[in-house]
Image (cartoon, rainbow over all chains, first blue to last red):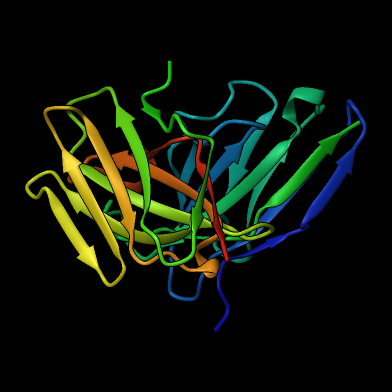
Length: 115
Length: 114
């Protein structure tokens, strides 16, 4: 009964380093979403991907952030040259289809701390 | 520019009593509304939803009420149990849209005391 798997759970990076966050969706799910929760804020949509395609990246910062969901393997959220403001909890969610009323299944998140 | 507001960051309720969590939104075009529950060190889990064609949806101890004219929704938990202690997020979106268009509130931390 594997749910959405995210790793690592905690990631510490120094300013200027790269952060790679991984997400394996639930079995049978081909839609992946990344959300970010900054301190004292709600979850904010970042990007929506299907296998090998970025469908909606309207919530992604224009620079330093990228995401992919290759044909094989997990989805990756990559943050280059991290800054302190990138410190947040990053949640991945998956769904079997695109309908809003399809419940999103969230992973436990990756807590990124930038020193 | 917060489109979804949960004005109470925390709420404490005695076991057995009713918990009422509130959520306000600004865009009258939203027509699908959800509540998620989050325990520490875990991701949010779906709790209950309602579309704009209804004003109430009930699932066991959980009931969501929607007041479209006031752009307000609420979650009622009756009776509250200690296991309900968690952070509750409301989320709003479009019934014909995609899950990528969900907008979440900042959450309300519910503490159910013995």
